[in-house]
Image (cartoon, rainbow, N blue to C red; front, top):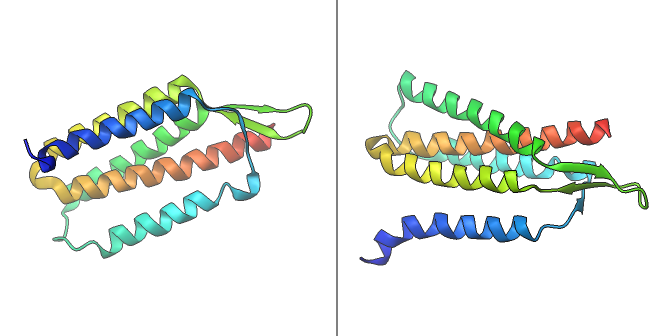
Length: 155
């Protein structure tokens, strides 16, 4: 086996390992309502430009339906991911602290492996799969931050 054959399987394993170590050693961290918008704006700019400037053949209605479903699934996953976070107000500093849960790790690990399986099974629909996964990520990022903002405002 050469590195080009191993790399598509090695990268998801590394991503899951990093997620595991990050969530297992995570400490509660303060949430700043003022900066929750930064990551979604960067994601919208980056993913939007990747979708706009990526050259490929025009898609049909089926491809757009797949991308719409991916976006809706990303929105649902972002909401679910934000609801797995534990938010609490620190009585000493009166700051909102956010803590990840093990459910968040399992959700993200499953998403990494599902994306890998979908990408390998896509075959000739490679451009649709890439665009759909980008829209899924965009929906998840924006919805997660909106849900966190909404939950913090309720505290």
